[in-house]
Picture 1 (cartoon, rainbow, N blue to C red):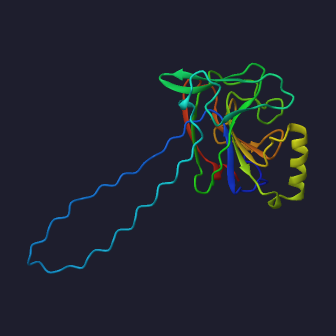
Picture 2 (cartoon, one colour):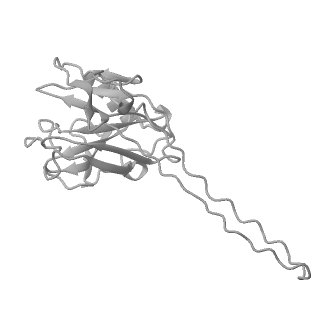
Length: 239
């Protein structure tokens, strides 16, 4: 199911929270040797200069979890984001996983997130890359209902929206939503989840608010216990 077109494409993307690992791909150029013509050879027109290769897109990344330090909650730049009316927090710490520091999140009837401010232009850098692993999925989750809005892992991308581009209805709904759920409710967001029942690529509105679109990035427990490296185009997902 695809979310209806109620969200408007933003001018800039903001914070993302989750277990992120961003990778950059480089390009290489090789030059071939040109033979020297004999002295009596007729002059030839100088060849036209080859067009410059396209510039590689910039890579913008939050502070990587691998930068440590070991056993800390998170590297500098990341901050714990609590939820209103939720007493118990998810526990975060940096642990060694085969020689690489990764973020571990442990939840037991608790909720909170890690948040990192990052202003980028999604038109220039639309590709989001990360990897995550979970030991099991949550069998009781159901993204279609408020009671089932729970996942083994989720990654948010918040978007900055100009209030002048929002309709009166949207501004009213946003004000009411923030009064109920807290000021951290975004004006627009994508939430990538590890779901338990819907197919990868499923997109639908969040059960609490249409300002958040849920995107199934991983599904089922077939890959539980293994690292998954994922990539999404936020411009394509934000419709």
